[in-house]
Image (cartoon, rainbow, N blue to C red):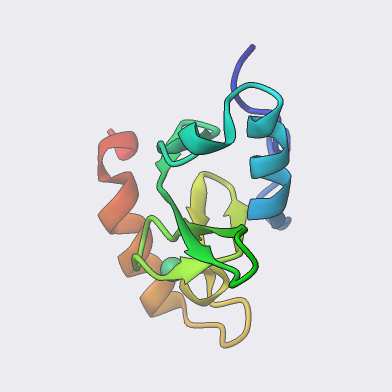
Length: 111
Ligand SMILES: [Zn+2]
């Protein structure tokens, strides 16, 4: 009941990824489809969802990256930072950018 079913205490050198499909699948067991537009909680982080039409009467779900507000299908959890691939610098490691992001989101946790 902790709301933290998506990776338990990742070590500092591990990155867990969460796909929006996993989250939506889990939400569908709890809510009507039409209600799955509320923010979801990943660990303690509130993440917004958006949908786009698939063109077949269905909907495609996306996360809004908490850091850069980009629509992404997958978020990455690294220590306490939840953000998209770009923000984590997984592709292009940039400690400067990552630091900026952490400062933005986790200011309140660093006390
Ligand atoms: Zn991002």
